Amino acid sequence: MPDYAVVTEKLRRSFDDLVAVDGIDLQVRAGEIYGFLGPNGAGKSTAVRMLTTLLMPTSGTAFVAGRDVIREPVEVRLRIGAALQDAALDPKQTGRELLRLQGRLYGLSGRDIDMRIGELESLIEIGDAIKRQVGTYSGGMKRRLDLAASLMHNPEVLFLDEPTTGLDPISRSRIWDEVRRINRELGVTIFLTTQYLEEADALADRIGIITHGKLAIEGAPAELKRQLGSDVIVARVDGDAQDAKRAVESIEAIEAVDVYDEELSIRVANGAGFISAVALALNESSIRVRELTLRTPTLDDVFLSVTGGRLQREEAASEEAER
Amino acid sequence: MSAPRNSAPIAPERRAVTARRAGFVRDVISLGGRALRSIPRDPESIIPALIVPVFFFAVNVGALQDVAEAIPGLDYKAFQLPVAIIFAVTGVTRANILVLDIQGGYFDRLALTPVNRLAMLLGFMVADLVLVMSLSIPVIVLGTIVGVRFETGILGIFAFLGIAGIWALAYNAFPYAVALKTGNPAAVNSSFLLFLPVTFLTTVFVPEEALTGWMSLVVKFNPVTYLLQGMRSLISDGWVASDLLAALAGIGAVAALSVPLAMWSLKGRVRRK
Image (cartoon, rainbow over all chains, first blue to last red; front, side, top):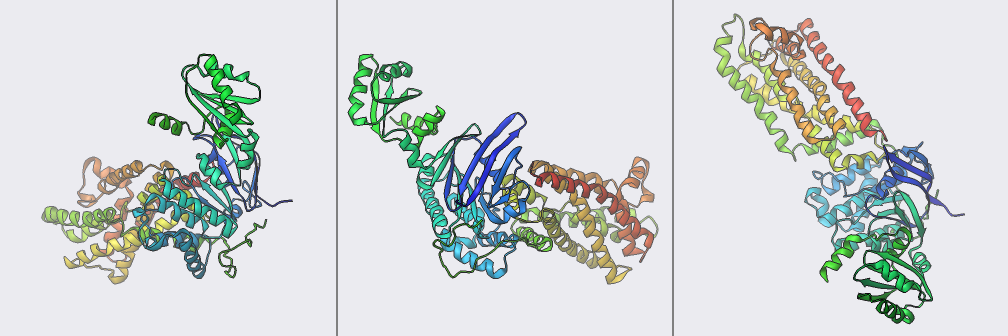
């Protein structure tokens, strides 16, 4: 019987007519990194705000670090740390002042505060910047300080709401390293929301895909990808992709075909063996193929097969523009 | 619930830090300290409060002294010193920082800690009190330089500062209420407008007896009239219980409106909606 850090049942939150979180059941094991993956507006932040006691659920239950989020918010607050979206920090305090204040509000003694700052300083590699006002920090430094602030009181569960949104790739990979270290070296359970597939793939032991307030699918990234079969043949076509879908669907051994815009994702056990059959079928139906590629499934394919949409629409669009 | 935190700690011998509620007083001190630190880093917000009182004192005395002192027994500099103090302290607040905290999300970050919710407001007000006391000192020094003497002596000066301080807190609850209710910096800036009727529709230029028409009526309903009267009595008349009580009652009337408003706004802001 594993220990659970986050358990919710039928967790629901609505704002007037809008149901932001629509009955989510979660079981996050103590010590794991759980990735909550979904597009903008899927309900990730609303879920995190409920789990971190900032927002009241409309219905359902939620337990975090063994405490009831609804009835024991202070007990929950003592056991969790959170870095919310956009690293909301006070620009007029220095890094050190901000960490000290954070420690004091958690009832830490001056000695404990100094000790924690010493430990966290090296973890987030902030260097001399800790003496400067936060307003002078780069985006990546702010996120790292925010991480440190949320760890001052040695929490059991850490919530990170889109920790790398808006960061450049180098800053992003630094944050990833730190998240891994926090999890591995401090044993902190991490509940992470993200709209980036690679982030969930790189960090999370298990992910849950959320769309329209509902949990669409859940599992370890590798396991989810495996469920799709071993290969994906992607065909970009001119014209109606539905016609193309009909053309290839009849090919034996093809497990499923998902369509998104002008793109077909054809799932098949042995991609190399069937890519020529796909090319032929499309050719026979007089469909102009602009691109035909073979690859292993990504989380985006998982997302597509579960939700019928692409998570990284914008990225796909910009790639297309480059061609 | 025991997280497997013994798996591979950075330093296995390190003493585990445990979070607990710091308690109300420590929370107020911690947040008050942070609000105080913000003051010298945000000088543009206090420079007006340093200039305005000196400016009005100089202009009012310069322009009106001869006219006003036609009223027998009126020492116009002593009459104007409380006005300068009121200008120095009224609406001098950290509500602008609070509203930026709310807008930027730092308020939520603090709300994630087990901090006492009331301390999230009182910390700022404690800082305000320290600030307005500090702003009053140069005004008092200026008054002394130009020859204003307190009938009530040094104790009277402390009483004078004390009245100014609690007045500032009572008045400042309004901008805090606006900050907490709206979370909108523009709305907090607009709350400055309240300063105008409160500080000008009163005995700011001449004594009540010299006012005529609608002004003479309006000033009776402005608590600042009684506040000024009480403060002036400390300078010119000695310890006059009725004047001091009237001043406190005036402050009380404002606080009876502003403090519940601020508390209600705070409650709405920290409630998990």
